[in-house]
Length: 132
Image (cartoon, rainbow, N blue to C red; front, top):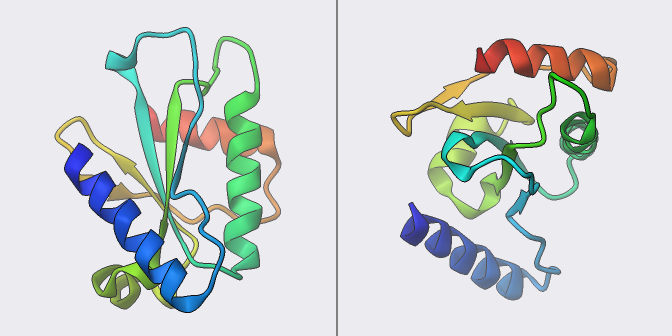
């Protein structure tokens, strides 16, 4: 998995440099005091200039930062730019933003679309339900 992430990151840097774009980070890790063995993972398929994708990413990060017994602060969000991978682009070009969770076996499960009108609290509840 580490080699794959490095390859994706290297590919993004190459594509960004070739297109003259600023290189955006592909993933962000939200730290927590919980052990890493129970880290929950989400993948957001996106592309530059997608306002729905940017809005969902902001709401997800806000949902991760909510405190309390139902905290999602152990969730890792990886943002994947579909323009860097032809397979992702074919699969999701008309569907982004697409949110998937990584199961314990490493396979991704596409989650139901989250409306841009949902509150951060409702998004938190839907994510908790998806992880349970």
